[in-house]
Image 1 (tube, rainbow, N blue to C red):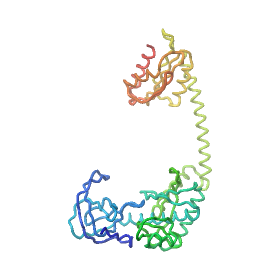
Image 2: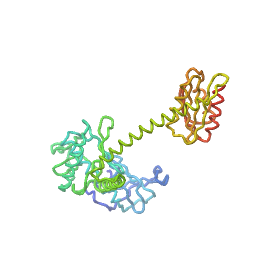
Image 3: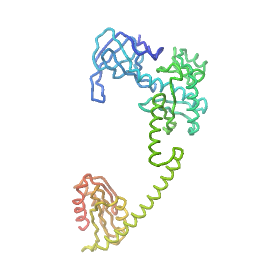
Image 4: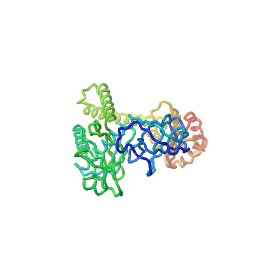
Length: 405
């Protein structure tokens, strides 16, 4: 016979009584506090919505048992609870704040999707109601920012007009004649949600009674998902919280930059330009420092019996950006080998003049076998990072002996 879905006709029903048809052990459920024992309960009727159609399941209580999950299994709805209940009658209570939030998001999605399709010819191919944001995936050409704002404004206009939201039933053919937004091929009686003069869409989810209860729709962003375009948005209480958080961040920026709100874009653009200029100046200064330091180290290095001029140093307090250009400059000198390690981080770079005839890759392989880390390169140049920075002096000593062998 299946479970009677009370939320189909009244999404505002919070408390109900039902008969437990069965209660049996279920697979343990993983929760925030660890694994919990669970039982599967079948009822003759329920107000609990199961995860389906992009909308997450309801939570709440069956007597003293906590609802951990609600699953749609065809004609039946399975309730996953945290304790065993006896066969008989039980009272249920839905977590109303969670239910109403889901109702706001889901009805808002219907309205926003309708506006994208009606005004810009962009149909919705999927919907997800997330913990913080909701998303719809649109198919077609990339929506511009004006498209996003246009759909948002049109949807909010319908919200402010407080249009009725009704549940309709009919066959696919009957709903098609009424102008359904998305055609379906299912047989039999279908449930659809109608937003007066705005949308008619097949849906089994929970929805508000009028568009005004959506509160507000706020579009947050756009991204590419395979062949589709993912629009992020939030409705109702979520939209209000996000707008409040945005205002707090805006006020913090205004305070930090010492400018008016309307001057924020110009101030941030100026700050970015200054950052880029300072970065270029820093890179130039570090390059000059590296060249000067490299020249000094090469001059101090005495060629060995095999003619190799070895420069091996464990550096402390040196800017990481200096390491690579310093090694490169040293390796430009004939028969020079540079072995430099930053003691603070365990970063190392080995390089040689091509005519030297050593194999930096082989040296690095031997060093990492004794002092674990990750890296690689070729016979003339390698770089790596030791897992333990305190092993830097020992790693440098081993590399130096191998280079002089």
